[in-house]
Structures are given as structure tokens and as C-alpha cells.
Amino acid sequence: MENKTYKIYYSWKMIMIALFCALMGFYGVIVANAEQWSSFTDLIMGVFGTILVLVGLLMFIYCINSRIRQIPALEICDDRVKMHVPLRNVYKDVMFEDVDVFQIRSMNSNKLIAIIYKPSGYRKIVNKSNVVKRLLIKFNLYKIGAVGSLNASNMTMKPKDICTLLNKQLKKHQELHNA
Image 1 (tube, rainbow, N blue to C red):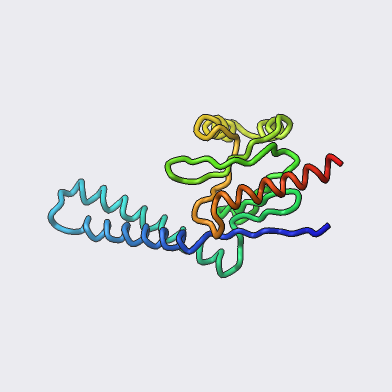
Image 2 (image 1 turned 120 degrees about the vertical axis):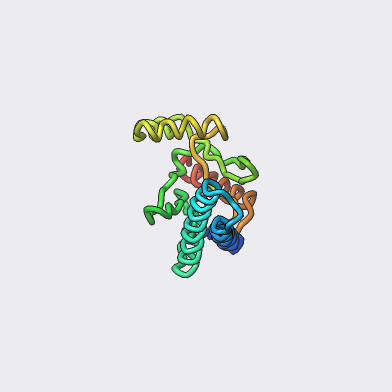
């Protein structure tokens, strides 16, 4: 049996969004320095503009760096899906043995792939979690009806195709281990 790994990267659209974010923040800083605003408005626009510039530049640098170094955002293997965590520069594994199904969900026009865990997988995650992570799990359950999710927007594949591929790999894994 072949061990095929599917690598999915952020699209160029994500890089353009990050660059646009930085440019809009830069524009906010310039407008804040204009003399037609009050000092309080200048302060607010300057702070938000600076934050927007920094976030946009960090996103842009991350996207370009991951493209140059060929770091995929998602890696779908035979027994797991690996999600790249940019701030820690590590991969978080979601094991197929813990997953029941993957489903597409939307939250504020952002496409997510909800990870529906089996009861044993859910218990495993909750038992390993601290208080803050448990609150995030409750929030995810409330917002999208799942414990975890994968961001599927602005990738090199369409969200529906990613979800189909994940469910196909999951089914293959389940057939292999149930036989």
C-alpha cells in the first residue's frame, strides 16, 4: 500500500490579504498624523493603524516564508492530519483513530472543516486540556458544533475538496484498521 502525503499551502490570496492589511494600517497611521483630527482620534487611529501594520506584516512574512521554505499549512497523511502552528513553528497532529468525520462549516464567511471526534477521542482531548483550553472547546462547540476545526479558507485547494480528501483518507484508515 502506498503512503501518499497530501500537502496543502496557503494561496497567494492570503499573501495579498496580509499585504493589504499592512497597507491599510500604514494608511491609518498617516491619516492619524494629519492635523484635521482631535488628539484622541489621532491616538486611536495611530494605535489601531500600528497594530494593523504589525499584524499584516507578520502575516505577510509568515506566508512568504512558508512558501519559500515549502512549509504546508496542512499535511494529510495515511493516519493523521498535521496542522502547522505558525507561532510555535510546530505541527499539531489530529489522529484519524480519534476522528469520526470531517464536515464543512462556516463562521463569519470563513470556511472551516469541523473535526467531529469519537467519544474516546473527545475524552482524550478534554483530559489533556487545561482550564483555558476547555473554555475554548466549549466556545468551539457553541460556535461551530465541534471540538476542533481546520481553517480551509485561502488554501491552494477548495474547502470542499480538502474535506472530501480528509474523509477519503479517514475512511481508508478506518477500513485498514477495522479489517
